Amino acid sequence: MANLYDDIERILDKILMRMLSADRRGIKINKKNEKFGFIDVIILRVVGQLDGVSVFDLIYTLDMDRGIVSTAIGKLIKNNYLIKERSEQDGRVQNLKLTDDGKELYELIQKKETELINFVLHDLTSNEQKAILKFLSRIRQTMVSKYDIEKIDYK
Image 1 (cartoon, rainbow, N blue to C red):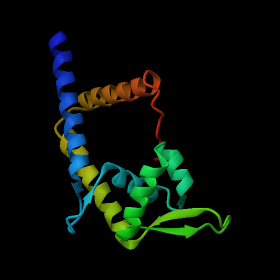
Image 2 (image 1 turned 120 degrees about the vertical axis):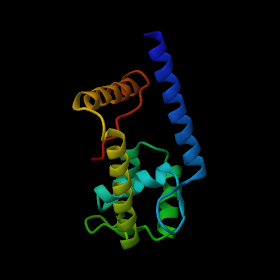
Image 3 (image 1 turned 90 degrees about the vertical axis):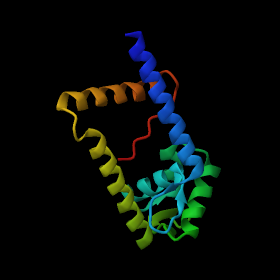
């Protein structure tokens, strides 16, 4: 049993290191060969799901540093994926919306995520898929309860 724990730990370490490396290098998603960091992708996903989300609500939802989120929003606006619009209810509030290019990129991100999940799960049995779900849920629960990492639910 100890070998399984060691193997799982090694695999999780490798996955984390690859994710950090990919984030640092940037992820190519679209045909323009632009590079996106994880924060860019997450912001596009949240804005796509919560169309018209305020900048404040986005920062609150992500529970991230305002400066990091603002920098990423600025980059996405500059590259014509997001726009800011004044709220009709409160003119002081700026809402984020996807542009047409942003909607296209959002759909591409969703497609690639679906393809990845299907690739990983396609030849697994229902019980194996349930075991993976239980494992991932336990990791998330541990991060929330033991390491005081807030839950981020935007779906």
